[in-house]
Amino acid sequence: MVNLLTVTEGYRHRGVGTALMEAAEEWGRSQGAVVAVTDTDLVSPLSVPFHVERMGYRRQAVLRKVLATERSLPDES
Image 1 (cartoon, rainbow, N blue to C red):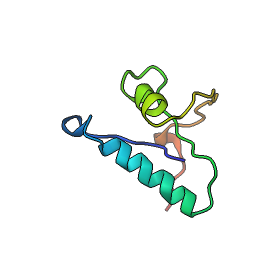
Image 2 (cartoon, rainbow, N blue to C red):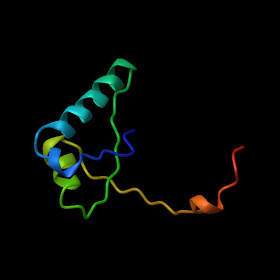
Image 3 (tube, helix red, strand yellow):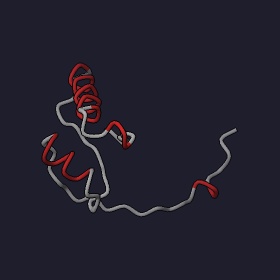
Image 4 (tube, one colour):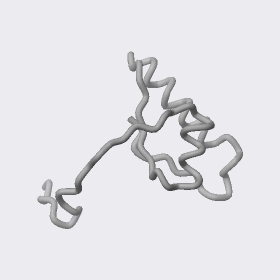
């Protein structure tokens, strides 16, 4: 699963995001994955066209609830 993909504004529309996603997908295939999953803000005017139109992902609903904020998580030390 790709949890975050960000390309700095000055490098957008140059194939950087596509290359990164394709590399992640290829790595997944090499590890035996048969499905690639990513998540994005469904109202983003940049990420939705990138994932759906450019990369061929399809929208699927995921419902989630945040149970704790980073500040309220227990210390891992």
